[in-house]
Image (cartoon, rainbow, N blue to C red; front, side):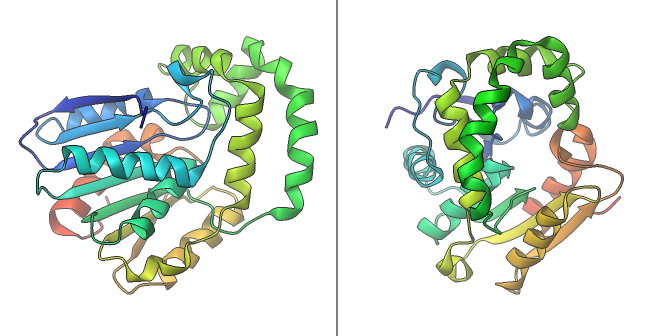
Length: 254
């Protein structure tokens, strides 16, 4: 395993693992790790991202297996809670299905589990056409705005965009669009909360309901007035909802 990660908080506390989205970095969780300082926080960097941008392969399953290995190294009989955004949320679902008894709770944010196989052939030509625009700050700002990262996070977002390899980006998008809900996920002991912004695309909302259907212990929460980016767009509410789920296993809706 050559997984890069940051370790924060209280090493004696329960384990919180924050998994970032595609094309961004662990810095997207800064407001969460600052809030959950009594917990033992791990923030891994996914394949081909940040300092590992020379690696061009990207696999949801491989990322999940690496993170499971990291959790097992750090676990020490503690409760483990995993939190993922976008492709990081897909990785969370994969972890829960691959290690059904390892995770206590999971918070799945904006995951898509309805495959769009018809889109796969168009990804490479489209990305190749638009890839040079990534270096353009105006274009990058418009992209960042969709994730609520055009403010204090923009510097980090732009720097990570410049590091991203063309092949990696194509592979990330292919993995994201081909992902479907693991068959055995309903057998997991983890309690899962699924969230999405009320203004997200229909496919994300459809995915929320599809995940929740498989197990009576799964719950969902649509966040008012936002699109794709709950952890950043409404960080305080996100932290309250996450804490309520971890501590009381109930959805706290402000």
